[in-house]
Image 1 (spheres, rainbow, N blue to C red):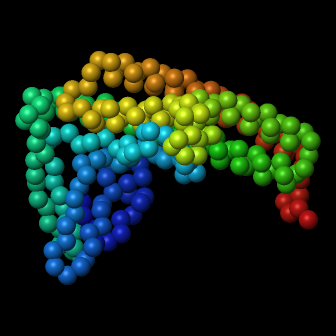
Image 2: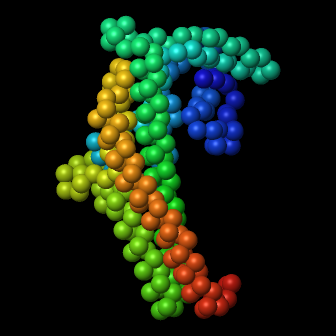
Image 3: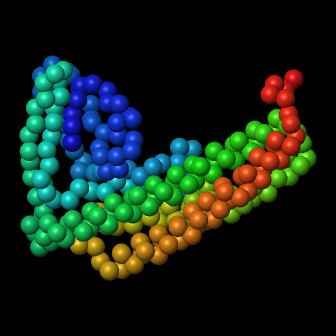
Amino acid sequence: REFSSKEPDEKEFKDKPGLSKPQIVPAKQGGNRFVWNLRYPNATEVPDDTGSMGFASGATGPKAAPGSYQVEIVNGGTTLTHAFELLPDARTGSSIEDYREGFDLALQVRDKLSELHEGVNKMRAVRKQVDAWSERLDDEGVTKAGEALKDRLREVEDELIQWRAKAGQDTLNFPVKLNAKLAALIGSINGTEGKPTTQVREVFDDLAGKVDTQLKKLDAILKEDVPGFNAKVKAVAADAIAL
């Protein structure tokens, strides 16, 4: 990981999965301490989601496996680099390879959770645009097509995320969905010091398959239903500026 007194450029890390953004160390007089929590970046989030993660609302970033790492301190034009070793817990009897298998699986789960949340974010962006056009045009055909499109999107969203939950206790009334189950699975993997069990792998395969099924449905909606709605909007031939 790299530590800097200059705010990092977000674009530099946007398309590099698994790469940690540099942390900012305060430039205060005297000694400054930074504690690494050993975690890689979290999964993509759903910005307006407040409670659907339920019991799995903790950090979802995979915990780093034992191995060789390095820290960089950048101060102006000077860069200081120091290598260090992250050691396995000798009491567990797990090898570095066992830890690596757990990390690799946790990373796969995190990436699948990111795919899921990116799909949810895309659906919600489409729905907001549908509502905006329906309100602006006030056309029965456009409104009807928009409602049909939103209904199809909601069917997919209902399987991916518990959008009705607004607080952790809401999951007592509304069941957790695939995103919360994936997040809980990361916690389960990170809570084990070593090689993941066969059952954990089977759970991930099952959840990943269900997520992929819903994302394929979403892809079909975006390719088929969205163009249909766009055609309805174009047919109205609305003015660019509505008075």
